Image 1: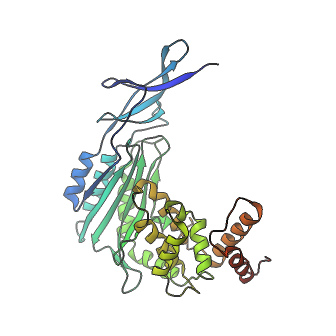
Image 2: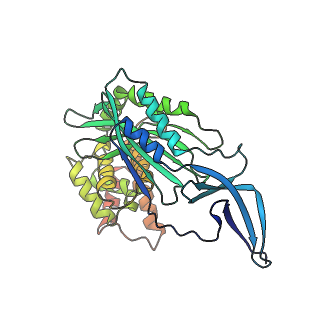
Length: 355
């Protein structure tokens, strides 16, 4: 049997069979544009290097011409990608952040500032940035619920992550994070193209110019109701929010208790807030770049993917039917909580579905 071991080669650090990193990821924060630009300068830059294949039986090495390894300037291997620029272009994290800052500066006629942070995985192959806008971009879900708009930016060097900009936000009353809840305010590119600075300008413009649209979306979500809190809990579990929690059902119930006014008619907005509360405050040390998927899943309560809000009756019914089918087909599927099966039967009846 032919055994081939692939390793990365860097001219400065040499062949690395195993690389042990003491770095547990990095986080940078900034409170204004000057600090944002300084943060952009501090982010690691990545360059291409050779990849070699090791034949373990003959102890021979040979270059792999169709692959490149990516190395940070501080000596971390962060990805193995196509060597063809038509398939993979390096997009530097610092360039992304700096361009967002330049795009914000284009709105100098408005009272807009920035604050936020950037998180990197230990090998720097994933980046997540929260850029909150301050000043004239505050919107209101209602009179007592101000929300600071901003931008959520994600990228990576692994060959699997492109570059994506989404609307982001933070509720002032509870610091719950929000992201990707209006699809038409999102922009993305793959590594198949060189870095496109214009997308950052489009993303910043879209968020700054869309408070009325965003407030309309949030108003709609406050007028659409699920059947009851049991259904809201099943929806949150179905969206995978519990995967980020040590105690999924107790934590989500606690979040629903904090956010829902009437357990007999939780709105999509309240259910979404329960999801973001759990992800923001109940997840411990889970890094931002891992939580991004949870916030994206939570956004499905406000966004179908076609720039419209979901139908709560359809969302609830489909969730309950999936869970009922799971309980019927899987002998290894335990109840999420004692008495769940009875609640599922009641919900199916409310939806007019034969239990």
